[in-house]
Image (cartoon, rainbow, N blue to C red):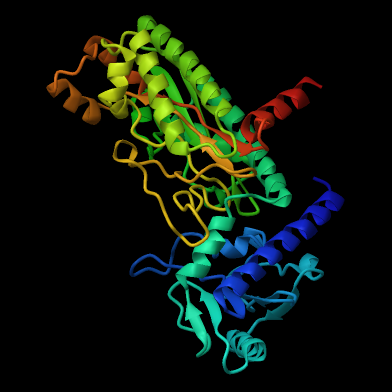
Length: 460
């Protein structure tokens, strides 16, 4: 995306965002929305803490790394948004650079002194609201900035969260970049694994290829070799490499301007403990890729993701029966929920500023929600799919001892010799990020497009 395209898309993005936020003010009766950027948090009894992450709603207006803590953003009808930017005089840390490039789109006021910023903010709010109108203040653990501020009113937050699901062309361009950066990291991770690297070394290879520090990752890398792949959010990274390298499941994404990619791939290792097991795992991996392809084909505007979750389990039942892991017919496997311990998570979720983006179970702008049905309690996406949503599609197949032990006690029709054969491989997950196109046009697969772009560049 060159600068001309970026400026054009950003202008359209702000126009779309402003029009929606104005409608929210009209329907809720408030005169302005005030966003707090937030501030650094520290660990208990410590002067250190995690990296600062700003208010996600503000990231829609400003790139995440261009947001300074203790800043405030004011949006009101028929007026240019105001950014009161905190840039303290500090010789301990480098100052966040103020976004002067956005001055065509917003009024930028820079303050080194926090009390002066608060005084200026009070003046703006008094001018906008007068003495009678109420202002929405969206902030974390912050007292009302003025007497007429209403903290985090649900009707406004529901509306803003619901809107975030469908992306503008500007957001999509950023997310394509995030996918490309993530794909570069995955390719480097695969190369390192094939060379016999440890989980930790694979993690370092991913960081180097993406050019990110750990604090810039959208979520902690899941780099799981062998049986670790049966832990869905495995968080450690072993420094040592065992005698066998059966498999690698890597779930890792990239961050660009506060927007995430979320990509998972599974690979067979260079030193499997058993050729018989490797052959069966290879067959399962190929079947799971076909399985994911078929599910992506069903991602269309208006589709019910709960139905797609059920379709995932129906297809998984066929895979498990065809490979002899389940010793009953597929219909019995599905209706008796025998597939659930083999895949206890949801098929996917909304993706955007947050990895598990908000509003996935929200059916309308007023905040009415639909929780997932009991067999699929982990499903984060229950609202109907719509054009320009970006979602993940991530079917899985795992051999999780703590879940399968219960089935063994119950005498479930499972070939335990095959389960034992495959348990050292942990499991399989394949995850792509897809944008929903108009009806009949399929999807834009951001993940596979990114991998293809890298391959094309390498071939030229």
